[in-house]
Image (cartoon, rainbow, N blue to C red; front, top):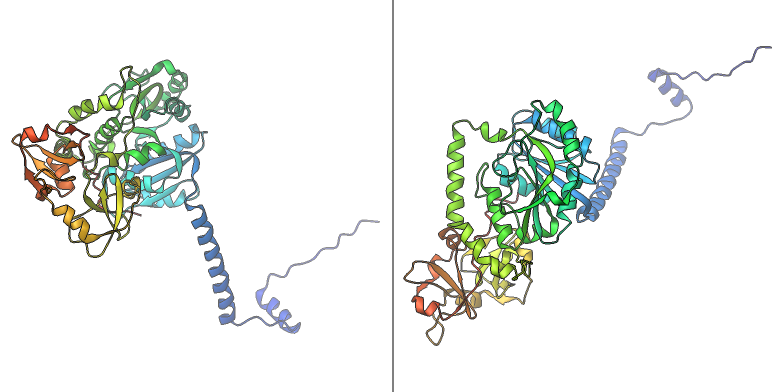
Amino acid sequence: MANLRRTTRINTNPKLRAVKRQAKGFRRKPVHERRVHYDRGFAYGYAEGLRNGQEQYGARLEGTSIIIPNFNKLDLLKQCISSIQAYTPTPHEIIVVDNASTDGAASYLDSMAGKLRYYVHESNKGFAGAVNTGLMMAKGQTICVLNNDIVVTPNWLSNLLLCLNSDPNIGIVGPVTNYISGEQQIEVPYTRVDDMQSFAAKYNVSNPEKWQYTDRIVGFCFLFSRTFFDTNGYFDEGFEIGNFEDEDYVVRALINGRKLVVARDTFIHHYGSQSMRALGDQFQVVNDKNAAFFSAKWADPHNWVRKMQPRIYDGQGSVVQHFRSQSFYPSHVAVTGLSETVYWVEQGAKHPLRGHVGIPVVKVSQVDLLGWPTGNVMDASVAEAKWHERLAADGTIPDGGMFTTETGRWYQRQGDTYREVVSGHALNRWQLEGRLSYRTESERLQLHEGIPIIAAPVIHAYHI
């Protein structure tokens, strides 16, 4: 006898199904009731997601945050991301910050949701602005700032991490490449990118003997620790569009007592200056403007780095002291960060001010603000009196007083030291020009020389 198989036929006619439900006494809930249940479920799910997100917001990634600023180079961005996915087994997250591209980058990033994190600016914030947004988003214990015209290679990140983690005094590590200015450029045997990876696979063999200490690293690829970021701070958005913001970041690293290393055992491919070339005739204008800003900010950066060397290194060349960015900021100034709270900075601590603040207030980054320990609440009138004080009771320069001498340079007294302001830009950034009194060089030389006063980075807005 043949085997019989019982089958169930599924009726796909919606009208017939409705008739049968009605015959069985089934009552479909009215639309408004279904909407109420939907809204309740949605609200519950949203609240749970928000709560979980808030709980996870501060969680750190035991890996590297790779920050890629992008502007109108979608084909290169895709290559960069594909190469990271193919050649980066080391734990990482990819963060793309787009500067209002018009080539479809936003749609592409939407399609990559779940594979990377991204933010799209409504206008072009420049390289520094995009990097800063990425730094605000980054969760990694280490951070890599990577150009969008890079193709990474086997072992690239693991090699750089080995170098970075080999010495706590290292601030920034960078690789070598085929196209860059300075000592990070090497000759390569390939002429097509398709042939590059086979060369890179043989080249990228970790070898500490190829790690080279230097005084300059170019920002096409910066790797640094979160601890270093907390001491060096954000990029300076005073450098518009691009160029010289990496030079500035390097100078700050050097005066903070951090070493720079070129990992000559690590190669990545660099197409080179794609976004800047796209500026056409405007490139030289942008470059010259940023060069002028760099000069105005530092005047003579090599002089300040040289002056800091005896404070950083002992007689054997070992690092004896690290500094934070806040160490180079003036005392007796009013600052604020993300909130409306205004603080008075004095003797290395910030004091929340109570009452109306009638003196200039300088906006600094939240990283800079958190770098000062918080002291007792101070009445704003007390801070205002200190701000306006020009002479101490004995006729000398008061603590925190600003003065100039016959040399035309600017100084602040702190205790038994004088601290020179590195440039007119720094003086204006802290709004100190109106506090200057005149003193002679002989009076200045009665004090000991302290560390210089530099400008805090310009941050035009908190982007996210």
